[in-house]
Length: 154
Image (cartoon, rainbow, N blue to C red; front, top):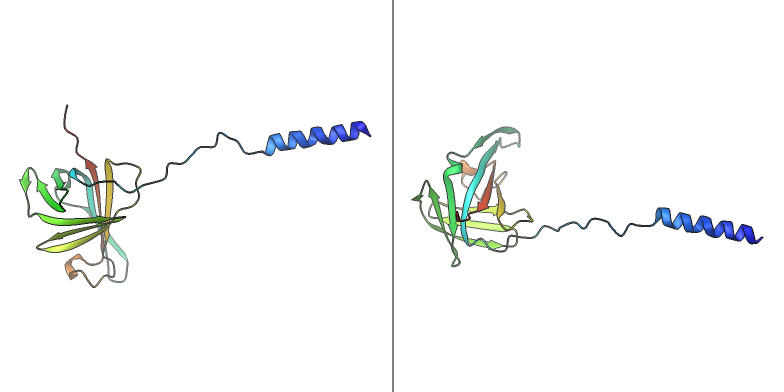
């Protein structure tokens, strides 16, 4: 009888050891919103994907001279776009949670900011499919812009 109890305890011990959770499980880094847009952001890549009014994919094309563009966001809500060191028309911006709104004299652009784990890289997406609130020339497309926080050369 004693050996039967001992055998059961040994089996229970091994079962618990084999099937227990590991204390060395990897901790995932949760994505967080970019803390601040203030500063210069260089465009790494930008593209526009066009769709027909019924939602069919038509084409994807890079934005012209995207790699030569950058934006300067100031703390007072101003944005200055540049192309090859030439300033373009300034505007204003607001950044709340995962939404970025850019306003210029020629229009307002609403971007979604997917959560990121970096304060130095940023992706923004404008999806105008089926939106009647934007001009027809900007409807039925998805614009994707990848930005990187500018760092001064040392």
